[in-house]
Image 1: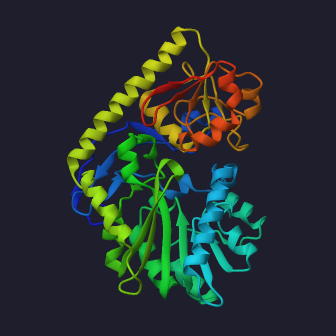
Image 2: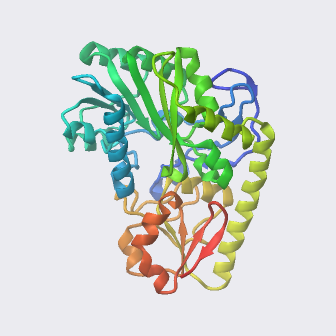
Length: 408
């Protein structure tokens, strides 16, 4: 079967396969096991437009729905980050007397709440009904919908054009970016800005963080790929700012061509990408080799823990953990259960390999010998919270940037 790049339609081919993969956030009950959906997770690098993407993505309705299992507010770190992000947007780009801000993929309103509290006109666009409903509890105006040109026209007819269109960890989820770009073009004022931040390709490659690749992350962006995607619609990158969130992210700021000054940060980041050879296919062949090494080392470590008679529990039932567990073939024989604070996941089983997910109480009342850290992007926050675990002789098992055992 011929594959075409989603952005430029060039014929492309996967450089590796992670094998059959379930829906990353598809935590399920035993009755659901026989009907569980799988697809093949195969990453691609397009040498023409330089966009990293996955070959096959499940229908959006299978991932974003009334039982979507991710809420931004479960992480205090992310709530604080979104407050800082919103304040930065206000101070840098909202100069009009009655600004209007639209967020694409607003989740439970953790970002938009900061505009609502400041009496700034706003609208969150969120396709998952359960998290959109949660946002309303915080006074956030939310439209339960996917964002596209039709949605943009609907917004403009009711609220007018936006001064800023923002997003966080959303653009990489949307396969049809051309329709999104058309919607942004229609919705944005002539002097408006588009600001979004996403997990950064450069950090993923540098740290062999292959668990960033899963169904929702149809793309992993670089500065060059963002430039190539949006230039077709009359936009240019005017600034980029690296972020530590999600294991390394990039904040992109775009405006219409020639409307605003371009920061030197853009040129500097492109030079970094060239130095790291992110534009060359050979880089992704080396990445595949590093993924295979990481997989072997993690499985060997867990099998040794089992031979030593040690209990290992997973920490945080993340979407990223689905890629790791299924790619490595790690099941309940090696991990007793996964501890998670999200009620909608508790009492269910992890996608594909069916490890039980229990509440945090099950962990703190009976600490294991080892904790496998799936939420490694919140490592500092988590290890500070669980300081007693190491003091009592426990050890953390990590796999990004490499497999390691962390003891006191």
